Image 1 (tube, rainbow, N blue to C red):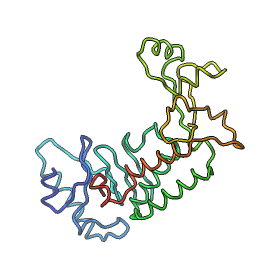
Image 2: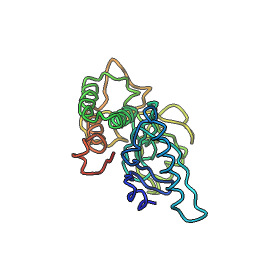
Image 3: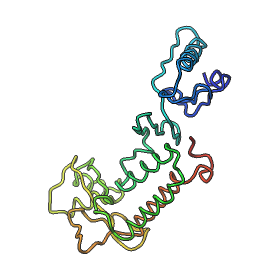
Image 4: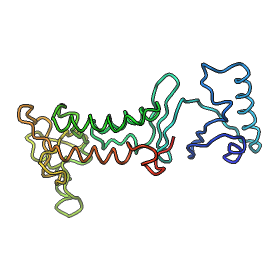
Length: 245
């Protein structure tokens, strides 16, 4: 299939077990709203010829067309539909372990790339840095929320046997006056003045946060933003081919 596409001037972008995303040949790479009847017929013929090139019994479906695509790695990509909707796929781009501000930065960066505005990403990073440094955001934007997979008592027992490392989530649950159980969620933020801290020893429950005496760890959250920018936000020529359009 890849050989056929390349042989007909199409450009494969992302290939995995679910299918192939590709850019059609130049004469056919026209927005739906700008296609003529002749272009539509040529596109239909291209799809028909593609299907006919496959062995008997193998059929392919053309599931959709998109304005742009960012492919980070296999099964991790973002699509921009013609109506402006953005679709994000893959654990690397939708990690539950990201704090809300990180998720917002990543999603906005992806949209800027998809819309051909990647040169605006450094300014986006600078705005996020300024907001963290000036402590402008509510603590919920910096806080991480995790679900207890075990009861705090089970965590303690595993710790006693050396089968678990310290966890901020469970340490906070144990120290709380509330009785936490498996399945409960814990939201916390990190305090301190250095970017490298032991999270379990510097975590505080969001419910304990005092907006009049803010104590979130600014260097810690700036480092998390910078790491995310370095991983996802650089321009294509700076990313050394890791992120493709």
